[in-house]
Image (tube, rainbow, N blue to C red):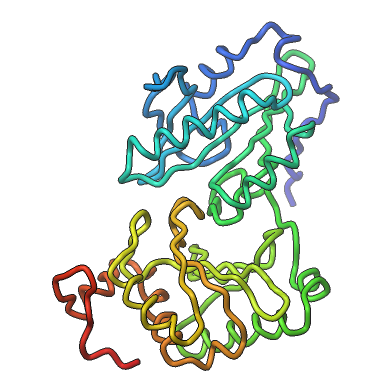
Length: 326
């Protein structure tokens, strides 16, 4: 039997980049040279020092498929200036590139100080990632290690190096202990009905604020627990992210008489799940709601046809669909 491969182990010490003669511009250039160093997978640089119409410049604009990452870099501890600027640049790029999904990324040597709580709360509502980039001094080199410390729970980083360091924060037992019996029963009945009638799902208990019902790698229905049910965000059956669609209008008119209100919130999860509604267990017996759940579930399948087109949308501002089995 061969001798196992042995990796040499040396002692090291944590240092800051300014102590080894590096500044913020150096760090920005170092990341732009190879964006895999950030730990977010195979990103490509779209633009460095992206000039903004309102003034200032974004450090790095990166892309992966149809997602743009607005990246702001700083040395030392996260400060209020960089924390606000990354959202300013992210918002401006959302308006500039409307055909893309957008994520804000804040990179700093430390994010454990005063603004950590604010960043964590903001990340529950908007697509934000905060990456700590720590530097360790060895015998004759500096090793930089990226660590994902704040993450919007709907952003799928599976398959990236930071997915390992991000880790899970909660489990099924944690949720059951914290939720009311009625809320816990709602989530179980919801999962059971979806699995039996729509298709396979995976229930992700790791996020801090919601239980994620996933279809493949997609969070199809995040359940935000309430006393007797949950607040849930769903993808639009027509696949729209920014504007209220004909399908949204149709199901809003269909469900409101049953006491189920649909709201459009395009700022949630970069618009991926814009339809919000408050649900209780008794609502799951509603035939019209079940029709909506099926339409939303089917919309996340690869190559799905917009629901309105499949139903034969009539022209006009208030489309009526025939042949719908309510």
